[in-house]
Length: 419
Image 1: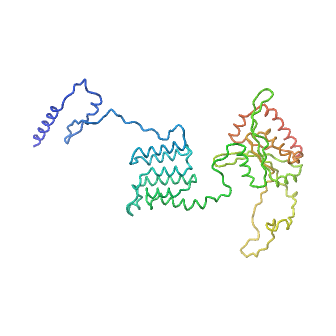
Image 2: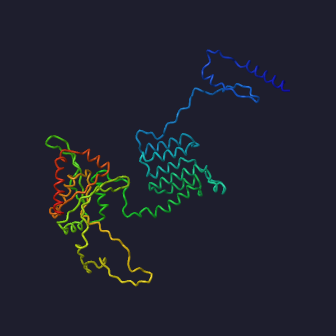
């Protein structure tokens, strides 16, 4: 029986080889040789097969990154989303595409655009991932797609973008009303309205690009006094010396309130004041530096307690003497540590924190505070950050070299007064 089966197989192979037209070797192409494949039969005998009607000359072309536009704008980002949606009806590879789009959104400047997030959600196929019964809903139907949508909503939450009704409709069409993305949407809509206006001192998303405007905004935020006055002592400009060298003058912006002027007017001229800094201040992703003019705390023996006038303000009294009934469980004394850091008389911001520049700030303050001409000034300047040191070294000029010897004289005078 086995011999008969082998004989029939050999006869069939010889008949197939005789019926197939043969080509001369000179007319055969490499593509024809690649199109011939060998398969194994049941007993391991090789059987040749040829793919007819298949063009093997077309090699697969590598797909390029859709987010490599020359001009990275919102229009180019939306165009990439629309091109992917029109390329394939089934939207194959949409999860990887959405993850790549989420990473590229800050580069295109659309990380806070709600319309772009809705268009990105529209990339998901509709009514495919909706669970049909409670078992599918319980076992997290299509987990990769649901996790991708949750990541998209989390990025919206991180950038402070509140979803709208269109986002809800898209999530219901894609994952149903009981999916994990819909629960994430409900949590965002519950908490965002509660914390949206919770910060009494909000920071705008777009900070001023002008260094003078940025310094004015930062000083007003630090002072937190409506009566404080911002003064621009020097605008950034470029000047030329007598020898023809170009020098860049930094900006100097200061702030002082009437209460600080009053404290400085009552300061003892025999005690020095100090210029300290730079101190960092972070405004979102931007770091600025400021300097303060302050004094040491008054010794306990020299403090003079001022009596408050009870009729100065009837609505907001400055001193209250109330005697509440105490229980046996209440403590008569409280362990509270009072730390006096000394008064702060003024603050300023400048792009070049050397002693010569801060001397100009003190000279400008002396016009509105004449007592500064009698008080010695001591500079306690730190090394500063790397960016500030690099900026200072880059803006070195002959003007700074000529003004540098003024620093030690002021310091020596302060030491003589302090001694």
